[in-house]
Length: 350
Image (cartoon, rainbow, N blue to C red; front, side, top):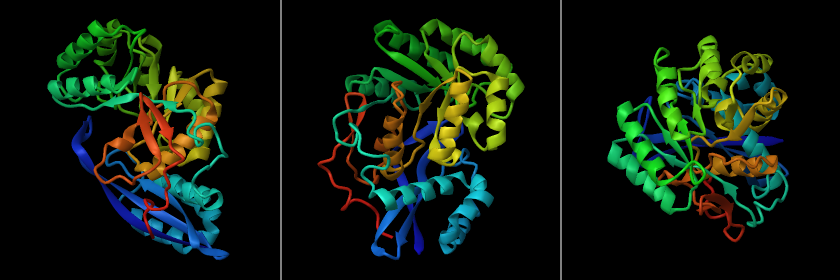
């Protein structure tokens, strides 16, 4: 028999982080703990992570839904089937806690060169939106830290200022030396998106994520067709039923899709998206979504297991003042797992 409990944890940003949807000072996560009657003192831990304005979960009903799930944890497959699509963050946390309960947290998907501490995962350096001076400072810090791929948020400040920053970077680093990925988070207006993308294309940009707001498949399909920069889908994948996933990719024809398990509903849902993408010759990579190190850990382990050699987006664990300490370490633009560091003292208690 299983038992389950949960606890809320509010993560505090080291610096207010700006997106096209506003400024984030804090972000809430809920840890779900699942134990088995055969070993009641041991529990698996999962993270249910919400991003205001982005996560599709009903935030007003979130805790009551968690309480309902914990009360019926022995029937969790029925909850996944009937309610899981409405609460993808909870579904991800449930899935992770069950993985942890079975595997003990260290090796969710079997021991690999990553969990042994031998190999790291190439990760992009994330540059947040803000004043030009702040963005320039971030870029220098990321380059000094050894990142050779930057992901820059665009769409929050004056577009000409953003162009000037990018030109300054390109003046110093060629596309062969530094890969630049852009993320608009849907900030461009429909009638301006292609014009802005064409101006950005002069800078040797690897890709641009979600140039316009989601749920405009026809408009986005035209942009993907005409864009001189490869377009990646991000928010567009959120809350899409299983039976419509392949059709969406066929209609829009993006160059890439970006997988965020805690927004899509877990690892297994993300695997389905990968299957559809590969069938359509669409590239993909994996990105964390402001989880604490609890959620980042399982995403990183799965990412390495996929064998995808592209640079991933797994560096968000360093953003918070009160993150859960963990064996995860960023070194020279790669995410490593240090097996010499134990989780036991750092994992939150139910």
